[in-house]
Image 1 (cartoon, rainbow, N blue to C red):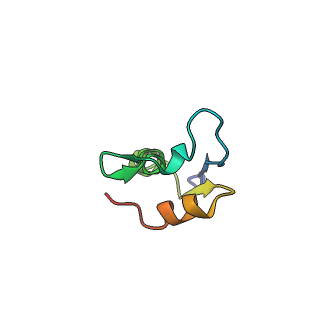
Image 2: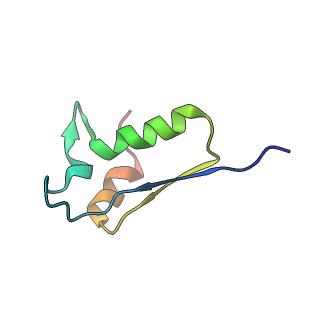
Image 3: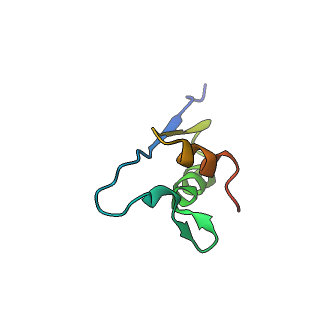
Length: 66
Protein backbone atom coordinates (compact mmCIF):
# COMPACT_ATOMS: atom_id res chain seq x y z
CA UNK A 1 0.00 0.00 0.00
CA UNK A 2 1.43 3.36 -1.04
CA UNK A 3 1.46 6.13 1.57
CA UNK A 4 -0.38 9.35 0.83
CA UNK A 5 1.94 12.34 1.07
CA UNK A 6 0.91 15.96 1.42
CA UNK A 7 3.09 18.96 0.52
CA UNK A 8 2.49 22.17 2.44
CA UNK A 9 4.12 25.33 1.09
CA UNK A 10 4.17 28.18 3.63
CA UNK A 11 3.69 31.55 1.93
CA UNK A 12 2.90 34.14 4.56
CA UNK A 13 2.78 37.80 3.70
CA UNK A 14 4.59 40.50 5.62
CA UNK A 15 8.16 39.87 4.52
CA UNK A 16 10.46 42.53 5.90
CA UNK A 17 13.07 42.06 3.17
CA UNK A 18 11.04 42.09 -0.05
CA UNK A 19 7.42 43.25 0.10
CA UNK A 20 4.95 40.73 -1.40
CA UNK A 21 7.81 38.51 -2.57
CA UNK A 22 5.53 35.49 -3.08
CA UNK A 23 3.55 37.25 -5.80
CA UNK A 24 6.37 39.17 -7.48
CA UNK A 25 6.41 38.39 -11.19
CA UNK A 26 9.50 36.45 -12.28
CA UNK A 27 9.68 35.50 -15.96
CA UNK A 28 5.93 35.82 -16.41
CA UNK A 29 4.65 34.08 -13.26
CA UNK A 30 4.46 34.74 -9.54
CA UNK A 31 7.42 33.53 -7.49
CA UNK A 32 5.22 31.13 -5.49
CA UNK A 33 4.32 29.32 -8.73
CA UNK A 34 7.87 27.95 -8.93
CA UNK A 35 7.51 26.23 -5.55
CA UNK A 36 4.13 24.82 -6.52
CA UNK A 37 5.42 23.54 -9.86
CA UNK A 38 8.49 21.98 -8.22
CA UNK A 39 6.33 20.10 -5.72
CA UNK A 40 3.91 18.92 -8.41
CA UNK A 41 6.67 17.86 -10.79
CA UNK A 42 8.16 15.39 -8.30
CA UNK A 43 5.14 13.12 -8.50
CA UNK A 44 5.59 12.41 -4.78
CA UNK A 45 2.62 14.33 -3.44
CA UNK A 46 -1.05 13.47 -3.59
CA UNK A 47 -1.92 17.09 -2.76
CA UNK A 48 0.01 20.36 -2.71
CA UNK A 49 -1.36 23.01 -0.35
CA UNK A 50 -0.23 26.62 -0.08
CA UNK A 51 -0.68 28.02 3.43
CA UNK A 52 -1.00 31.80 3.40
CA UNK A 53 -2.57 34.74 5.20
CA UNK A 54 -2.77 36.83 2.02
CA UNK A 55 -5.72 37.06 -0.36
CA UNK A 56 -3.30 38.33 -3.02
CA UNK A 57 -1.24 35.13 -2.73
CA UNK A 58 -4.42 33.05 -2.93
CA UNK A 59 -5.35 34.86 -6.12
CA UNK A 60 -1.87 34.30 -7.56
CA UNK A 61 -2.00 30.56 -6.81
CA UNK A 62 -5.55 29.82 -7.95
CA UNK A 63 -4.47 29.44 -11.55
CA UNK A 64 -0.76 30.24 -11.92
CA UNK A 65 0.49 30.54 -15.50
CA UNK A 66 2.58 27.63 -16.76
